Image (tube, rainbow, N blue to C red; front, side):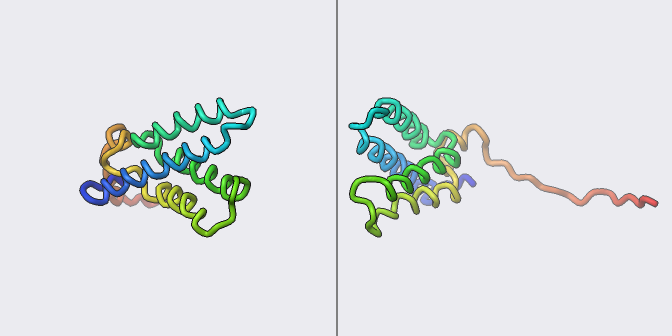
Length: 122
């Protein structure tokens, strides 16, 4: 869940990329009446995603925002516009990587389940 080395750096770059797209999508709607709240939430989510805090949950939010921007945003409809959705979905499935706050909070744990003692019940 928290790969190091090259894969960890790749996940760091993917987190930064998804955070930048989330911020750019929010910035494209700055002329709306709810713009300040949307932009403030996007800045907070992008900063958290960049450092790797709550990555799976914020990646779902970023994926939903990218999908909404794909369907409702200005100039939507191109195949290249699917890239942010795919990137955010990949980040949901891959996790934050070793160079993240999540890795520091939750650590690299391995759960080993050993077979228990058999009990014969009548």
